[in-house]
Image (cartoon, rainbow over all chains, first blue to last red; front, side, top):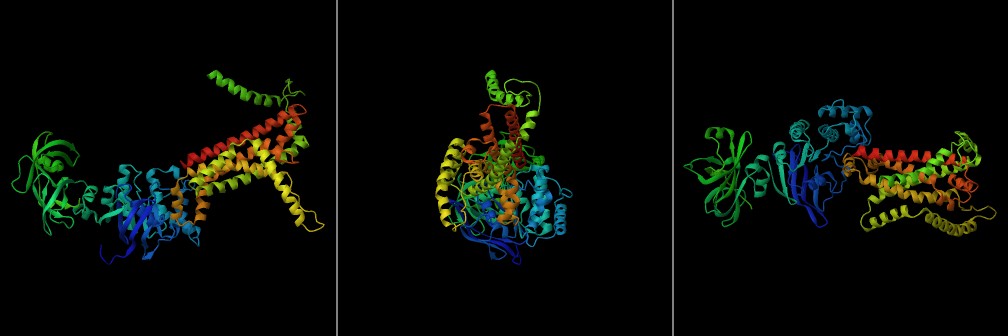
Length: 366
Length: 272
């Protein structure tokens, strides 16, 4: 994010409690104009609450929500220039597709004339590739089509921010992939700020400019998908954004760029620290499955461990091996098809070695 | 078991069937069938007493249905915002209102109204200027409609509330999100979605008021509704004319009930 980009929305110390339950706690975040930001986290992590506070459906208990530089804590949802695509679309069953899309336009005072409404609705129907579907009833549309109607109903109002609450949860896998690409293209084309809530890390990684990972009502880390994947700060982020192997360790020597740590099995490893570490601190060492090499003989340099193959799953372009090390426990290894073609497959029960480059190791917060 | 079920149904429906069949009896007496004829229908429809009673019944039923549907809907919507023990209390009161026997409502309403009128009428008389005749509150159409509305309103509340409860809350939020004011949301989303339930409640209230004898008997005062007319003429013997009236009332009521059922079912399948 360059500094020149304008901030369209901001959370300042935003907290929301429902009785004794803290749904969101001290959220601080600024959303840049035109970006695609995702709130990622498991259900109950506070991501939907954050979105609903932005939409105006929930009033914050503490802190401020800013839209376009103004505090909007007490501005009601129908007076906020944002629109939402609901999880189950929430299309009005008693209205046609056309009337659903025109709904927002018709609430404006003074009301736009018929021709303007018609022209705007038809243009947006074209954008979501539903030309000619205007007179249809909602229940005559398939799930994917309903989703496009929901999208059209929101973007026809040219909102400052488009909020998407798990919009793809009800679609099947193939349709979801298609819609993800379509949404991304649409966002680039319209230049509207998109804020997506999802529990699907793949969805967040593939679509977003930035991801805000949440857990237990707090923001854990905010960054681009690549930053989160390559430099997670905590074990939680590393586990949620992609999969990883984790080993408990104690910091033996804390340097600025590299940290030496002792694994539970007694081995010494070096890795990049994800946060400020102190000598003697208990940390978590993480390594991605695709950064581990599997070989029949121990490599000359770097760190290696003897293992036994426990399980093998063929995934097409990759083969996933579950291996067991006497000291490190079970390790997941992802071997690309090409290197497997070169070295041959390993069978269950076979003895082998895992090895990795020390730059691949990350030292994370427990 | 099956035989048992059949006999229960026969027991329930044979008397009704007999009335319908004997309404087409050409003979003078209700006990023996002399041949097919629709003359009793003509006779009933040209009887001025019957037509007067029918008019009274229709007006009372229409007013009751209008009042019950609008008041009941408002109450149902208002109750959405109530929670906790107050909600439980209201729910209990509504169900009790439906379960109380008509005769209790009839007597209770009669006593209550007579007492209130006994207070209000002298007060009105005292307030009115000398010479002018003060208005007298009396049992009649007003009290009849009031009593019927009270009872049927509970039905409407139950029906409309079930519909509101089945409504997707996110539809209201979507409307709000699309810049509709609370009133705009009510008019454009809530009302159209609960309309089938309101209409069904209207029809049920209409049918109930139209068919009711017990409550009307106590509170109608000098007004004669159709059920009251039938009751009083039966005391002079059951004629095929009464059978004809009964059959017509039954057919009309059944039709309204079927329509109400269809409305409720259609509403559910569409929104589901």
